[in-house]
Amino acid sequence: MDPVKVGVLGLGTVGGGTVNLLERNRDEITRRAGRPIDIVHAAARHPDRPRTCSTDGIRLTYDAFEVVDDPDIEIVVELIGGDELARELTLRAIDNGKHVVTANKAMIALHGNEIFAKAREKGVSVGFEAAVAGGIPIIKAVREGLVGNRIEWLAGIINGTGNFILTEMLYAGRAFGDVLAEAQRLGYAEADPTFDVEGIDAAHKLTILASIAFGIPLQFDKVYTEGIGQISIEDVTYAQELGFRIKHLGIARREADGIGLRVHPTLLPERQLLANVDGVMNAVMVNADPVGPTLYYGAGAGAEPTASAVVADLVDVVREFTLEPENRVPYLAFHSHFLSDEPIAPIESVNTAYYLRLEAQDEPGVLAEVTRILSEAGISIEAIIQKQPAAGAETVPVILLTHRVLEAQMNSACTQLEALEQVHGSVTRIRVETLA
Ligand SMILES: NC(=O)C1=CN([C@@H]2O[C@H](COP(=O)(O)OP(=O)(O)OC[C@H]3O[C@@H](n4cnc5c(N)ncnc54)[C@H](O)[C@@H]3O)[C@@H](O)[C@H]2O)C=CC1
Ligand SMILES: N[C@@H](CC=O)C(=O)O
Ligand code: NA
Image 1: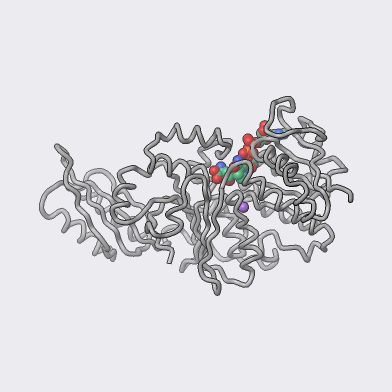
Image 2: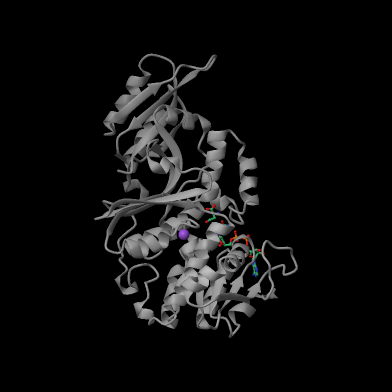
């Protein structure tokens, strides 16, 4: 049995994890793939650096192009991250007739349309299971397991670092910088952690999920994105009093004007399973016809869970070696000539319920003014709470939960609320989803 020869680009967190996993579960993996899978060539920026994996039997080089040009290599595993150089190396590997496995969501979200077109032309596979929700086999589940369904919406916690920070900071009282540093130490964070904190990484993943769920091209630039930076302890506390938890979600849903793609903090009823996904864990809920809601849960980041997904793709590619390219599972689940040009709905036309918090002067008539403005904007109120003023404070917090409303209506109502003399500062607004 000739081993399959694999080249790896990048021996960092995921690269090291992948080398270790192929070694540790070698027998099981060989019995499943039909042949042993050997990493024989790897590019590392610092080949002499101590690593988390053994490099025995692996030819090491500084030059990633040497690996993609190595005629012995059948599959290239791209694990350097970033988008431009990774794209160049991936396209070159494909041009050289090699299959590619990658964990790089930025590259797939930004350049996937081009990469898949080139891969189709060359008849090679491109696996990217590790790019979304780490170890959860979500690409496989949506692309293959739900193939008979029409997907209505999906919603998920799809950034491990962000969820780890939120959980530790808001529910265990730790400081942001301290938790982020720990996420970096544990290998969860992106090279530039603002990608995690500002929701960019989640938007990359949502782009990919939406494409395979709805059969649309990858359109990262159309995702509406808010990060976790503006979530305050105060709002977490009030949300809890109302029976909700705040999570950072990626949501893709069929809306009246097209498909809505958004990443933002969200209040979820505390009984929702997604509301109880904590730490580095991720979860994606998919609502489809006819299956109904299904939920996928597991570690969203870290060396070993991510390596699990990389190895799953490696085995899939090996199993498909002898399949005619047209009989393989399409990269984006739908055949490329059947991808739809359905528009992406602008955020203004998205419909959600809202949590609002405003600081109002503690005097008669203010609540009446607030409810008048909302009612004139066609927004109905589900709950309203006026807190006691803190000692010596000029204002009292007023918290409202609204029914579903168009984003555009909410924008204009908030402008009017902020213009009231009795309302100080800006209105805090967080979308509410019940995922029903
Ligand atoms: N860490 C995680 O939990 C997950 C990471 N990913 C993705 O996996 C990819 C890799 O991430 P990590 O392993 O966490 O990053 P990392 O920073 O730990 O590893 C990347 C490695 O590539 C090396 N490298 C960079 N440019 C190179 C070049 N031109 N030639 C050779 N080596 C080069 C770096 O020196 C580093 O050792 C990224 O695309 C990331 O988004 C995906 C899922 C989870
Ligand atoms: N930085 C990412 C890594 C996995 O995709 C995350 O924290 O989710
Ligand atoms: Na995955």
